[in-house]
Image (tube, rainbow, N blue to C red; front, top):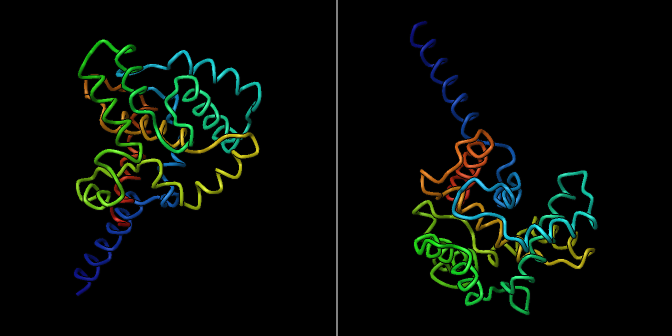
Length: 219
């Protein structure tokens, strides 16, 4: 009898340990948005920072010399919009991508056709267009492909709060949501030989995997 009770006790202890290892208190509907910053953590050799992005980083660092995570997030989202404006990636409505311009830019910047195709498909996926519209999110979730296109994140509470903070600087969240989505996709689905096997990149990818699994579970 005592042996059975002991076995039950250790079983419950094991379950508690597993749950503690597989869940995180900061996982919510905005866990992808609030993940460690991925916009300038280039963990995949498919792409580098564009000159436009680098110029915008310097410009906005003068405007927002950040000290907190919240200030850094604002800085990065304003940098993203500045970069998308300079490359003409973003539409006049600030809520859509100029996919023709995106493709032309990738074709001029990358030499490998396969890399162009992969990144272009990723931009489509992260925009509201293409085969990743809202109706298909439910299907994609079942396939562990749950990175959200930018417009589907706009109604989220965390994005609305971010939008209010960005508005003080004249910035809109959409370009940053797209760029963060693209960066996250490159971390999650980078070809094995092109992924940077650093501690930071591994940690970031593991967090994003947990986030994606959480979002799939919540669906």
